[in-house]
Length: 90
Ligand SMILES: [Zn+2]
Image (cartoon, rainbow, N blue to C red; front, side):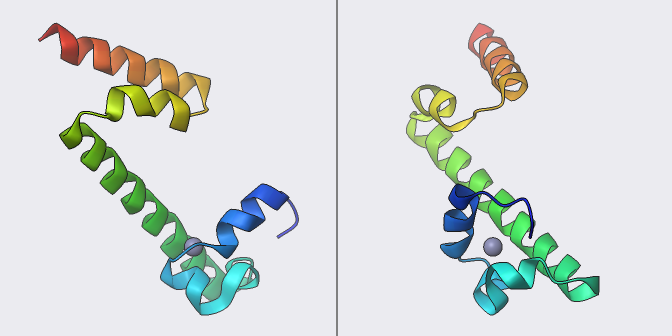
């Protein structure tokens, strides 16, 4: 993996997904089907963890105060702001 920052490397070292647990960062960068399968597994695991976090925060009412500290992409922030305003209008 040539373009992984130290911060990303630290996060990947702590990842609990089956792909990272099985073969670590080097396993994610493997070529061929096995590397692709590990990366796909990692990405799905992270996505499902994110969904679980969002669900929990929406249920306990902490999402509005949390999302701006968690989402760093300006375009996604604007989309979330827009969606929340639409929800609040109902
Ligand atoms: Zn992983």
